[in-house]
Length: 243
Ligand SMILES: NC(=O)c1ccc[n+]([C@@H]2O[C@H](COP(=O)([O-])OP(=O)(O)OC[C@H]3O[C@@H](n4cnc5c(N)ncnc54)[C@H](O)[C@@H]3O)[C@@H](O)[C@H]2O)c1
Image (cartoon, rainbow, N blue to C red; front, side):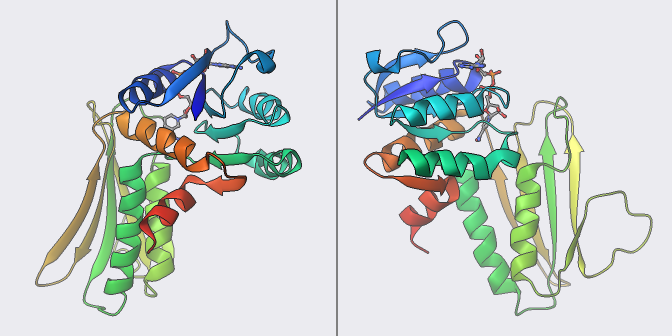
């Protein structure tokens, strides 16, 4: 198995170092100055693509038409997901996309999902989500916090909605509160509190750097080798965890 890196920015460089550490062979690196062209000159089975929303669809088309498998972590193109699925199926390639390639975060999703099922039977416990990110982050709450919220609300019958705005009164007991803090250099910390009169159970994930995303992308490139079809990274983790 060998890979190509498409997009040699922060993530592309992290993927290069992770692939080297793990003995995964990199046969090509593409960026704006070395565009994806003449693909027949390059021998690789899977491209790991982290570019930007303006480039990703063209890159997918070109790679798919050349029969290469694709792992893409680029975000901001999900409005075109149906079109991309058709391209993947028409060209009979393997494709994995994900808005969060961190293995740790995806395992955290599984843990929170299962914990929510456990707490569903114990009405004494309320549940809340808190997330913290560095001062440069543009949006709140984070997509990861929202995903946690959806998982919790799907599994705890007494929670039906999400509130992430400022609250000027008592919170509706059916609402799940997702709060955010911005500042400093925090890479991304997500906490889920299960809280009752007598105790608190706290589940927390703290990202330390970009390495987790790169490791997940390299893992995905290994998983998709010799496979075809359209997958979300979550399905790769579920296939490995089997719960
Ligand atoms: N899914 C995840 O887990 C995850 C994690 C981190 C970042 N991201 C996403 O990955 C993308 C890249 O993030 P980044 O931090 O590496 O950004 P970056 O700006 O550091 O790097 C992007 C690179 O892509 C290159 N590029 C642009 N157009 C190209 C093209 N047509 N062909 C080849 N290369 C091209 C740019 O020159 C740049 O080097 C963003 O969409 C970001 O949101 C996703």
